[in-house]
Each structure stands twice: as structure tokens, then as C-alpha cells.
Amino acid sequence: MVSRLWQWARIRSTFWLLLGTFALGLLLLVGAVILPPHLLDTSGLTTEARLKAENDLRSTLVTLLGGIVVSLGAVVGILNFRETSRQNRAEADRNRAVLELERRGQMAERFTKAIEQLGQVGVDNLDVRIGAAYALEQIALDSDELHWPVIEVLTAYLREHTRKQKRRELELEHGEPDTQAGQWHQSLEPDFQAVATVVGRRRLEKDPPGRSLNLLGVRLQWADLRSAQLAGADLRGSHLEEANLSGAQLGGANLIGAQLKLANLTAADLRGAQFREVAQLLRADHRKEYDELAVRYVAQLNGAILINANLDGADLHRGNLEGADLTGAQLERADLSSAHLQRAIVYVANLEDADLDMADLTDTIGLSWDQLKSARATEGAKLPGYLEAERATQRAADPSSTVDPSTNAR
Image 1 (cartoon, rainbow, N blue to C red):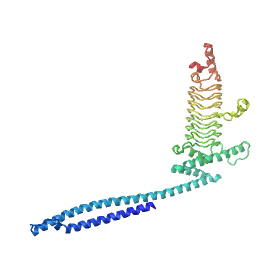
Image 2 (cartoon, rainbow, N blue to C red):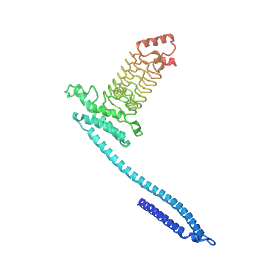
Image 3 (spheres, rainbow, N blue to C red):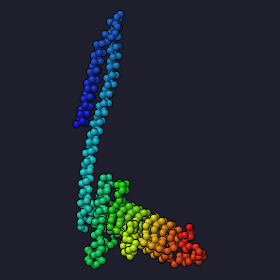
Image 4 (cartoon, rainbow, N blue to C red):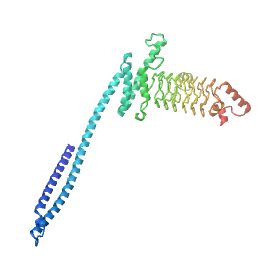
């Protein structure tokens, strides 16, 4: 109501300005015709000289009138231009609001339709589900508002539907018939792979602050997750056996109870990743129960490929790294106490300040005395035979000194 009154007032003011300009112009025009004889002192002038003087004054007044009219016209033109521009901007704003409303409606319709397609079950609808996953990715790219809802829908899909692989796996283990034998254990089902790909390559800058991926208990064995953005993700109890996680960003991820057997973690960033329960599981006086329960929470990385992986400060206490390839891995300050590293490959791995207390390094491949000296708490570690001999030589050379090579180095 107020805006309409203001618009009406602006229109009326423009009208009165135009009317006033016309009246003033008319008045000046009449004055230019009538006033000159009364403004001039024509005494003593001939008729011809008087007429010439009156015409000269009329010309001057008309010129002056023209300048005033032009100036007033310019003012009116500017005011009219401003009013027209304001009306155009208001109209453009209304059009934009209408278009934005239509766009949001269309986006919501696309979102709803894609979710419905993603929920279609059956082998015949596999291509529909894959298409729905990529349609949701495009929606997340087009709409900042729907980015995180899309990611939540996709992660919920993985949490809920990948569990069916477990039932299928059990069927195969018990020898029951499988209509798609050989498919599930060779690669991840295509719709799960499509969803995981979309989640892994999302635009991180669109993630809301303080939110992280909820991938609790997902079963993504054999998944292709190369360079996936999984930093801070909740992957507790997940199954990532034989998954390709090379170059993946897993910094700060919660990997408690995750199964990573034979996973490829080449050049993956695992800084600050959590592999075991930090909170006390059972009281220390129930040691047997603690040992039995804790084994479910330790890192399961046996056979994993961790070439050049960044495990700086990782908590791998009691972790299973048997047969893992740790060539060139960054293990500074990592907790490898009581870890199982039998047959692990550790060529040029950085073990500076890593905790090797009670670690089992028997049959470890590529471990050098210099690497061992850079670590700490190595006295209780089980070493390969050739390093046990080196340790015995060091003891014999200086019986009074500590036998911990890391302490000797310091």
C-alpha cells in the first residue's frame, strides 16, 4: 500500500512539473511578445529604430526562453529517465523473483523424481538407478540449497542398500544358488559404484560447516574410490576390502572397525585418521574380555597397498598390517605399538618418532637399522633376524648402554 502511494505521488509530481514547465514557457512567450514595448525607453526614437529595439529585445527574451525551456526539458527528461529506470528495475526484480520461484520449483521436482528413480528396485531398473545418481549429482551442482540434501540421500542409500551384499555373501558362503554368480565378488554393483563416485567427487566448498559424511557400516568392497573426498567421514564398521582408495583424502576419518584388507591406499592422506576406539572399552581388570572386544576395533590393513600413504600420527595400535605394502609411507609419530607387521614391505618408509613398542616386525621386508634408529620404544619390538643380529652386535660392543637403538640414536 505504501509503495503504491509513493509511486502515485511520484507520478503526480512529474505531472505537475511538466504542467508548470508548460505554463512558465507560455508565460515567457507571451511576455516576449507583449512586454518589450513597455520595457524600452523609446522616446526620441524613430518608428524604425523603436521597432528594431523591440525586436532585438524579443530575440533576447526568446533566446533566454529557449535556454530555460531546454534546461527544464533536460530536468524533466532526467526525472522521467530515473522513473522509467526505477520501474524497469522493479519489473526486472519481479521477473527474477518469478523465475527463481519457477527454478526452485523445477529443481524440487527434479529432486523428487530422481529420488523416486533411485528407489526403483530390480535388475531391470539398474540403468534407471545409475541415471538417478548422476541426475542427483547435477542437481547438487546446480543448487547450493540442495547440495547437502542430495549427499545425505546418496549416503543413506549406500548405508541401507549395500547391506544386501552381506546377505548375498552369506548365501554364497553356504553354497546356496546365486542367479548372478561371479558378479558381486568381482566388482561393486554398478549402481553402488555410481553413488559412491558422486559422493566422492562432490564440491567440498558446498559442504555446510561442521557436517561430515555418514558412511557408517557401508559395504563398498572392490569400490573404485580413487581421489575420493572422504576427509572426516564416519566409516566405522565399513567394509572396504580390495577397494581402490589411491589418492583418497581420508584425513580425520573415523575408521574404527573398518575392514581394509587388500585395499589400495597408495598416496592416500590418512593424517589424523582414527582406527581404534579411544574411549575405554572395558575396565583394565577385565583384561581377557578387553582383548577379545578390542580386536574388533583395531585397524585391519593386512595386505593393503599403502605406497606413499600419509599416516602421520595415525593410531595403529594393535593394527593388523601383515603383508601390507608401506613403501615410502609417511609414518612419523604413528602409534604402531603391538602392531602386526609380519611380511610388511617398508622400503624407505619414514618411521621417525613412530612408536614400535611390542610391534611384531618379524619377516618385515626392507626395514633398515637407520629406520629403526629413527623410531622410538623399539626395545620390545620383534625384529627380523638380520636386525636382531645387529642389535646383538650393538649390545656386545657396549654392554653398559641401552639396547634400544632409538635411544642410542638420541
